[in-house]
Image 1 (cartoon, rainbow, N blue to C red):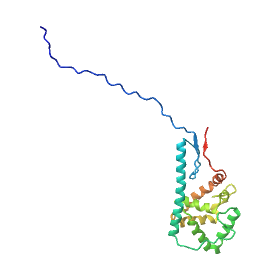
Image 2 (cartoon, one colour; image 1 turned 90 degrees about the vertical axis):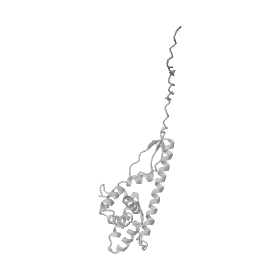
Image 3 (cartoon, rainbow, N blue to C red; image 1 turned 120 degrees about the horizontal axis):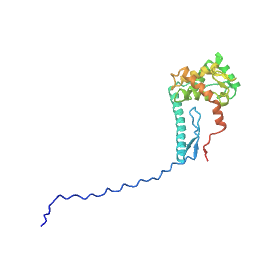
Length: 224
């Protein structure tokens, strides 16, 4: 008789399960068929931004929010200035001077007004009035005051040093008026002449761009 040897059972080895098939389908990228042109530039030249329809909508909403925020900041600063300042009489300007100054002749007349010693009290009232315009920093306060004083067409005929046959703002009495008005604003009391000068130079340099934007409003274009 044959002897059967009892041994240990070996477990059955099953093949590993097949790996899941990888999807090789490429995700389609959003179409960049639109070109968005920002209208708020912050003092810099803005180019068109290629984007999809959804991105175009988001950028439009964000820019609208930015514009609304700027308006609210100006209003808040104006109210803060009025609350923290001592009420005074209304500014009485000469009949031939009105803000903003629209002609170089009006600028010259305003210069004569500022240099006349007898107009000292009236000059202080003008400073107090300009100081309430508002702005969240030295740059905005300086730019807002200059925008109240001059139209874009007139500011295009002025620069800091008077080069290219333009009127020199650094030699005008209105420069001292600007410095005083900026420092009288509650938000920019510690502003230095150097800070105000830097922002004033930039504001006059951008006069040509501002005048162009007024004539040709920026539009969002669609590319082929």
